[in-house]
Every structure is written in structure tokens, then in C-alpha cells.
Length: 380
Image (cartoon, rainbow, N blue to C red; front, top):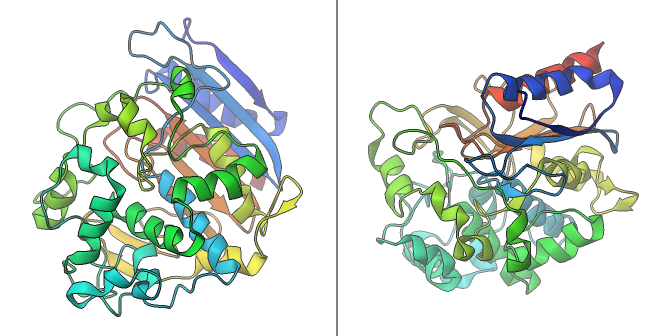
């Protein structure tokens, strides 16, 4: 690890997290990464290190940011939870109440809660689309509004890897009058002073680390026979991590996969949920509104991911796949390894983001080992 400089701070109580973070570089698991943890609203670990490019010519700095893929979904879910807390939307209401066109093809009774819990039957597009179409909000949302679900909504789970952000984002747009990225910026990022973006300005490109794709064909599950739903999700359009290096991708609002930030911003945003609606001394939501995220919506084997899942309102819940120490916890991760865990019992947030991708979608051992060190310290 002689060429790696680790920056930042770890409270001595959580020195094990710093050691685990450093070990990821020492054993070659990480190229560049950041990790942040908050406890009771205090940032107790904030670390970064490594390189932003494969050729190791540009160091990962304090303000380096990176595409976090599906960890972005947690920001989108937070926006919907905030609007629900304000009484502006009802998760039990039909989506068509806010988005009338969505009622087409038998979707008149699909609830907003189905969108939030990957059970609406719209895990992908029925029509063939291209990567460039992801930058055309009107096109991709109109196609989703028009198509029939792939299964009976509310009766099965299938990870809405890209579509969920457009679906929930369009409801947010119809209710608030603002795009999802604008709502997030004005209602969350700017009031908190956090460096997370759903739609990144060109002026910030110089701070973005390059994602390094995992070896082999991009995969986000371990299914031996992926089946139609997985194939549709992963090839229509194709998953291409190199796309995240382009200005078009960074500028677009892709609320399920296109967010750009670092571990500090992810952890500090989700203090809102961890601390009963308050972050940096400002109340964003009621505690009851935060706890809506904990309400189990559906559980079973996810038809896309191929593993048992338990979905709350916009987040994963503790399960045999992802066991967590405390029951009132929620989480999600992004393709490649980024992850956020929000523990409402311990009032903690743990966030890890990186640029060397692993073939996983709900976090991997690198973030998990640091989180384990955090939990051990908290339990001591």
C-alpha cells in the first residue's frame, strides 16, 4: 500500500473501521474509495484514499465524487417519503391519481407502494430502448405509463433496476412540479450542504472518479438461468459502466442509477432517516414519516436478483440475504459495491463508495468488513 495515501479522520473508538478501510487497499481490493459513518448525528468516521483512475495518476481527494449506481435509489425514496410526510402523496393511492396516463393497460389499481417496493411488474421496458433513451425523460416515462406489467402488481418481486427511478421520479414531478433531481437538490442537498447530485453540472466533472468495470460480462446476480426478466432488465438497454464516464450520463437525471456523490454525502443525507427526521439541527421530516420506510411491503424470491428479499418503502429490510444487527434498519447498495445502511435503533448511518467495481448490486465484502468493525465498536 506504499503508493496509497489515506485521508480523513476516524474517532479512536472506531479505529477498527479505519484499519478495515486501509486493508481493502493493502490487499488490492480497492483502487479508490471513501467511507463515512455517523452516530447520533455526529460524523465519527470520514475516510478516503486511493486513485480516481485506473492508471493511478490522480489521487482520490476529500471532495472526489463517483457514480454510485443504485445507491441513488435511496435518495429517490427519501424524496417520496418526504412528500408523503408532508401529506402531498399517499403510498396506498393508485399511481394514476398523480399520473393519469399510467392507468393504461390495466395499471389503474397499481399503487405507489408497488413502485417503491419493486412489485409493480415494471422491472424493465417492453419496447426496445437504447442507452441514449435513458436521457429522454419524457420518452422512457411515457413508455412505462403505456405498457402492461410483466406480472400481477403486488403479487411478486422483480428488481426495478433502472425503471424505479423514472416511475417514482415522475410521481414526484407530478406532485411537486419539480424534476426529481431538482427536488432533491432544493429540499435535501442544498439545505444540508451535501455533495450528492442527481444530474451533475459540467463544472464538477473534474472531481468525478472513473468507474472501473468488473471483469467479464456485466452481471448483477448469480442466477444460473437468468430468465426473461433479468435479461430484459440487463440488456434493454445494456448495462455499460463506461457510460458513467460520459457527460450525457452525468448530466441526465437517472434517479435509480445515475447519482454522483461520496460516502460523506450519502451518510450525511441519511442522517435524516436515522435520527428521526432531523439532520444538522434542521427538521426535514417527522419521525413517523421516517419509519414508513421500515414497513414491510413484500417479501419472497426476487425474480430478477434471484435471492430472497424483503422490501420496505423504498429500501431493503434485514433478511437472510442481508442480516443486520438491529431490526429497525434499512439499506440498499449499488452495482459495483457501494452501500448505505441506516439503523434507526442505533441512530447510525454507514456509507461506502468506490470506483473498482465488483459484480454485485447490494454491497460486497469491502464495505461489509468496515461495517462489521463499526458494529463491533458500537457493541463494546
